[in-house]
Amino acid sequence: MTSILTSLFVSFFILFSVQAEEPIYLTIGEDAYAKMSTIFGERLVAHEKSLDTVLVSIDEAAIPWLSMQMHKEFKRCGGFFWHEDENEAYATLENLESILQSQKALYVEYEINKQSQVIESMALIEGTQISSTIEELSAFHNRYYTSASGAEATEFIAQKWRNLVAHRSDASVELFRHGGWPQASVILTIQGVSDEIIIVGGHADSTAGFMGQARSRAPGADDNASGIATMTEVIRVLMGQNYRPQKTLKFMAYAAEEVGLRGSQEIAQLYQREGRQVIGVLQLDMTNFPGPSFDIVLISDFTNAEQNAFIGSLVDQYLPELSWGYDRCGYACSDHASWTRSGFPASIPFEATNRERNPHIHTARDTLDRLSADSSHAAKFARLAVAYVIEMD
Ligand code: BES
Ligand code: ZN
Image 1: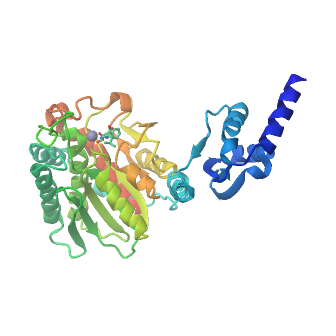
Image 2: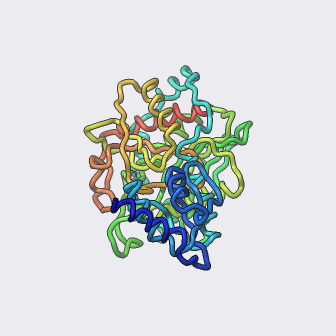
Image 3: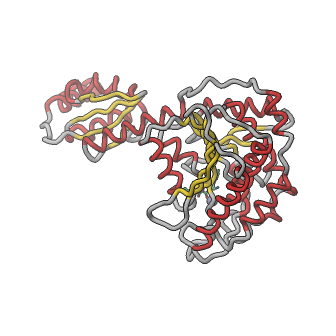
């Protein structure tokens, strides 16, 4: 009886309380919208739907009631996002759509049918080549995005990649300059017949300590000379095989990851604005410190689930001796998240589970002698990346 009375009272209040002038814009789950519209009636206005989220507006007086009902019906605290104004609400919804899409949608039909080419190329990967690139990169005092050595390090990578593609007229290496800091990103393009783009990337910068990072010693051998060295080995092998891609391949060494994914974000946003057809992004960040649980760990958040499953099947097919599993970062932990946010499918095969990863990163102890001997761990990722590139192509 009391509950009926309370409900009547609540309904009465919800329907007849004074309407505020400016409506409040919220995004709320489709399930919640269905339920709340039966309670709030015309006070709750739906403007647009994106995947399983609805952009609604409601008068401000209803907010505490909405909050209460959401908690009662869905056990969600809040359960809706509050937006600054109409424009910001639409912008978020649009971005939300691309974020959700880039994590769930199927962008290409994944197939495994280039066995002989993959197996032949994979066999040419050499861990010792990876070690020597890690050594070269960790010799820079640091690769911080604002330091002179940070800028020199990415010029060094550009030169190294230019040497690897010097004989190829379909390949070019560009320094992608960023407005706000001296360290450039590096982009190697191998132009295919098609404009569809496959990207293998990793960050070139390093950091250590909490203050004065521009002057601290930051070898960043695992984080992330290992990823750049792994990519460099992939480039060396593909060029040695005189590999001619159908699709366009891009290898990217990003500036300024350690300060909030800034380099990759600028590039991904530019590609999104230009409407580039990026069909797959593989991020290599930390590949050379093996953990006890799995050889290869696929990070499941801020990545594309379909592409992750495909990468798992590449391991099963081509590297059956290796174990692989999933783990989460719990936040946008590396450059793959920049691509995901811009609406592109991205994955990151990682060296270990999050708990078992290299504990020395972001210190002067992130050095090659603490990584896998002869970079045999990183070599697994180089083989996987070779399989990824050839099968995606
Ligand atoms: N390589 C690290 C972290 C990482 C952890 C990558 C797990 C992949 C899986 C990366 O360079 C890093 O330090 N990221 C920062 C966040 C970034 C936005 C500054 C971190 O994890 O704190
Ligand atoms: Zn880092």
